[in-house]
Length: 70
Image (cartoon, rainbow, N blue to C red; front, side, top):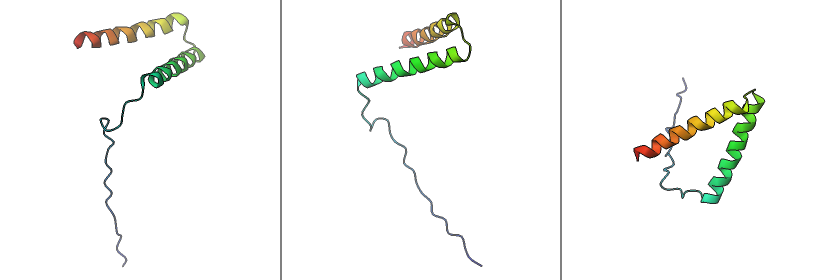
């Protein structure tokens, strides 16, 4: 009878402190792309501009609360 041989592989997680942060311009561009993508997706799914403004206001409120905790 043949024996199954297994090999354990250890995966080392990437530590965020090892990788340098993306330069600010790249993050700004990424945020621009993300916001346009979210807006387009919401509009395509029937959300009205007032509803999108309500969503944006809620996000701003959450960020403001987070800043107040610091």
